[in-house]
Amino acid sequence: MELIQSSFKPVTRRAGLVALLIAAATFAQLGDAISGFGSDTQATDSYIVQASSLAEARHLALEAGAAITHELGIINAVAVELSVEERARLQIVDGVRVLSDAEVTTAGNGGKPDKSTSSDPATGYALFTEASQLHSQGITGFGVTVAVLDTGSMSHVSLNKDSWGGWRYLAQYDAIAGELLSEVNMAHLGTKRGGTGIYNIDGSGHGTHVASIAVSSAKGDDGHYNGIAPNAYLVNVKAFDDQGQGSYADVIRGIDWVVANRNKFGIRVLNLSLSAQPQSHYWEDPLNQAVMRAWDAGIVVVASAGNTGPGAQTIGVPGNVPYVITVGAITDNYSPDAGHDDRLASFSAVGPTYEGFVKPEVVAPGGHILGLMNNSTAIGTAHPEFHDGGAYFTMSGTSQAAAVVTGVVALMLNAEPALTPDMVKCKLMNSARPAVNSDGSLAYSVFQQGAGMINAYDAVYNWNYHCANRGLDIAKDLSGEQHYGGRANQAADGSYYLMGLDGYTWTDDYSQTDGYIWTDGFVWTDGYIWTDAYLWTDGTTGVDGYLWTDGYVWTDGYIWTDGFIWTDGYIWTDALTETMSINFWVPQE
Image (tube, helix red, strand yellow):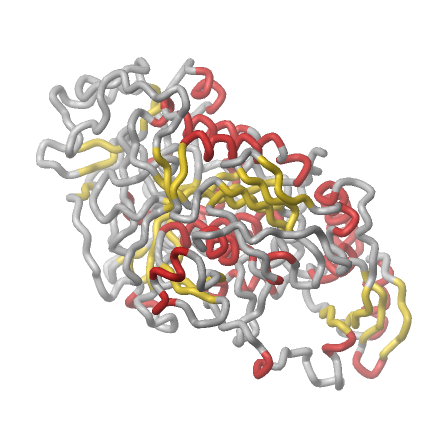
């Protein structure tokens, strides 16, 4: 099953019949592609379609293919029978409200949920990143499958089903055992008739927490979704044990399964909230090679930067892969309504990489993040003070920040299914908001915050597509024909700088500065020139005399801080038993 590629742009204002038909055709094609062609997604439920007038409501409902059962002129609405796809088509049209019959009790009710009956606390990060604005426009991750490779997941209604009550949990794969544990009956996908048995295979709790941040369909007591992409499909891959430990072989097998099954399940995004210390150049690491192949296959890979900050050159594997989206963490400092005191989390790993690339690309909320977790898991048992006694647990880390970005990527692909991974990365970076001081200078180095804090709304509606991974050729990189380095270098005084950007230096410091703001008005010199790559003159390792193709020369005797951490000619074991783990526990920030 190949995904339908389209030039569809999100519809934010009603642009007439043509725009609606284009959107409708795109959603219909995408729904067929994801659900496996011919699956039973035509089950309908009763809804109210409300517009500016009865005639408008009737016209839009008929254009979407809905069957009208009642005309409700008193509230400028029609009662209709809608399938999941038909509802999605209507929800993207501005000024149109689609409500279940049960939600409308009087003409002025507004369909607001009864907060007093909610059993889910509000998480807040959907509001913080402005993903909630997209939810209100019908952009909820529908039609996009997210794969989470982690410690597994528990069965929970907000993970198993989307916000409409339709089944969306597609498969569970155990990469440790090499076994497919569960797979959805495609006839049940998107319906309320139930799916397949989901196993509680997360003895750690980390995988469930990460998955819920990305895709939970629960609504908090503030009326907003708790997950960033509440209607995305979910695939879960277990590659780590109850203690969060695994091997390179298990993780690579998990990635291999995701790539092999990407078309079957429509997998567009892969979350890797895990980390290991680099032991070679990025292109020599077998795990990184698997990650690069996933990216080359059209899967957007989101990796955590690691919890090894705040010192320079602490980015872990696979976050050191130049192609992928690597995510650092910020915290709201326990004051979500006051943006002036947000700051970079002290544990968030920092670039540059040993090959000179700026990492992370972006930062996202990663401090005291609320997500699903059973209190009997290893993490829940070790830190009971952070469990609410119900189903939710508070945890900090770049794992959580990566999960937020994974959800945002699903929203972007929902809005524009034809985006390539490089396009997604560009739009995400180009719409990010760096932290700046009152004088407009950067509050944090580009090596600490990348392009800045993500903004989901701006990422969806940003039309810059070609600013990321310039100068890189992943096919040649994988074949060994060429390898690449970034613009970062280090001066004799130990400060880091970006070649080609005069005056930019950073002296490896971490500061919990107050008084800065996240701004979208900061313009990077020469349009993200720091994302450009250069060829290595050869594939060898060393510490001096590297020659860049445009004439840049690293000074003789140049040595990175702490030197290269691997020995010349590092040999990987035949069984790939090298240790890999989820990001380790850090104090709440």
